[in-house]
Length: 287
Image (cartoon, rainbow, N blue to C red; front, side, top):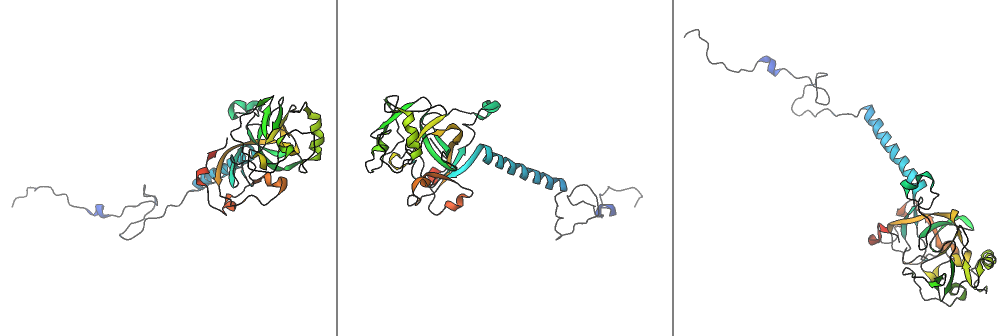
C-alpha cells in the first residue's frame, strides 16, 4: 500500500444532514421549523392588507349595485295581462331608468332618447304617483288620433300594430270608438272625461306638448289612457330592457280594477316561484 490518494468519493457530510430553517410560506428562512414525515404543512394566514383589499372589493361591488338599481336599472314584476302577449303575468323585468331622462352632459355616454310612438314605458300612474304602470306609447305630442272598431288611427292613417291582441269581449263603444261624446263606461275617470272634452276636436284627440297617450297591447283587457288620461313626460320612469326571469301563473291576477295593471317592485324573485319557470323567456329582450 502506498500513501497515494485514491479516487475521490462524494460522501455525505454532517453539514448535509442539518435541518433547514423555513418560514410558514415555504420561502426563505425566518424561524426554525423542521418538517418530518407525517407533519402537516403550516397553514398560511391572510395578511391584513389582503383582508382590506377583499373588504374594499366587496364594498365597491355593493355601492355599484346600489347605484345601478337606484339610477340606471330596476327590477319589476308583471302582475296582470294588460300587456299580453308582449309581457306575460309572472315576467320579471329589468327597466332602463336612464334612457328617457333629461340628457344633460352625459348624453353621449348613456344614450338618452326621446319617447317615440310604439315605445313601451314604465311610468307613475298620473293620479297616484306611488303606483307604477307599464304600457305602450300610441300617441306623442302633436298627434291626432282616434279608435274605430278598436283599431288606432293617427292623423287619419290606420296604424300597423302587430303587437296588439283583441281577446273576445263585450261590446264597449267608449273603449272601441274612442274618443266618444257619450259617457258610457263607469271605469272612466270623471276628471279625465272633463279634461278630454277640451282636447278633442272634430272627433280626434289632440295630444298636447309634454304628454303621451298609452294603451295596453291586450286592448280589450287594459285600463289605460282611454280611461284615466294622458301621461306627462315627467312621470315616465324608463323602458323595459329584458325579462330576467318568468314564472307560469295559472290564473289572472285576482286584484280587480286599476291595481291589476300596476307593477310591483320585486326585491326577491324567489317570492314568485309558486309556479314553473318559463326558461324560454329568461333574458328575453322586450320589444
